[in-house]
Length: 174
Image 1 (spheres, one colour):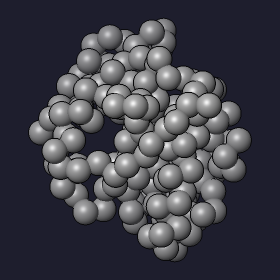
Image 2: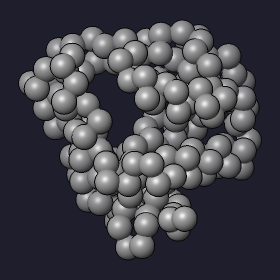
Image 3: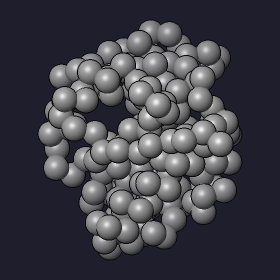
């Protein structure tokens, strides 16, 4: 059994998170035929640079959790307190904005450990519903979220460069 440590990110983790976010997003989506390289690169340059991640770390509503195996960052999650969207039925929502495992640690429980930590943190924060958007062409992630009690409640657009993609909105009670 792999020992996975989950910790909350600190401001000085901006570079680590930037590298981890860039790598895990690339690994998850770069080879899918529906993603044009220019769209992917445009989105990633905007979303995963040190200044952007540092800004997100400074936002008191955003919480980043880092999964570590030994001294290595194996994955991360980002939750946003109070963020909501049309179709989400909640009085005190929390968004699971990102949850990614490093490719070499897939199947080692990193994603589940991060999910459990996010749900625990949502309870500590007094949230009633956790919700997320997952790409319609990502069945592996959809199965993972369904296994964790999420169900589809709607759809929204995720803008990847010039490509307006459809995400399924999923939610579950906390």
